[in-house]
Image (tube, rainbow, N blue to C red):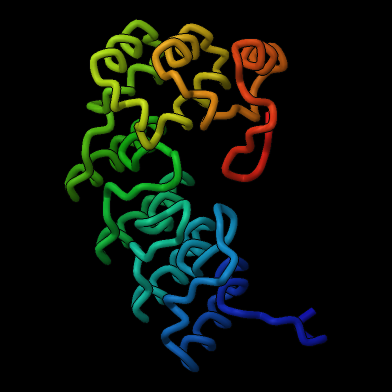
Length: 232
């Protein structure tokens, strides 16, 4: 493809782990370290995001040395950058440490996903939990909706009833989808009963046939699309 003129830009090079090509392009124009392609989402984006997601620490380091910003917005899903989340969720501890050394925010928001610390806790990665806390990460276990992740439907009902504003919780759709994938009908019912317009903004596109049928019977909108355009 390259021999026939395909565009081998810095995003593709970073995603493929081609350190030589990344260096070559940065030598021509160091601002490419901060390049964000017109089309970016969970699967592609800045060269830093692509390299961090694949575990290419040498490329991550070179990009940071040339001015890549680990907090550069990649909207709409990552207003605080996404490289940290990608590295953390894939278990690339050395890349997480490097990004933090270059000023990555430990509490960045990525779409409807859990916080960085909650990801580390779910992975039972105590070293990463300690590192994130050292850099100021907020304890995810203190989140009032964390009870949903532990199957505590009664607590979900209580906190939403006492704090109606939690209906606008940034991770609500993610937490609901996770409960559906666990087939946790009690937690799902707690959300359905306490969040009046839940099915106007939340859709589950993955899970067992039984749980999807149950949700549709409960009022889930079969034509509502999730963030990647998938309907139930």
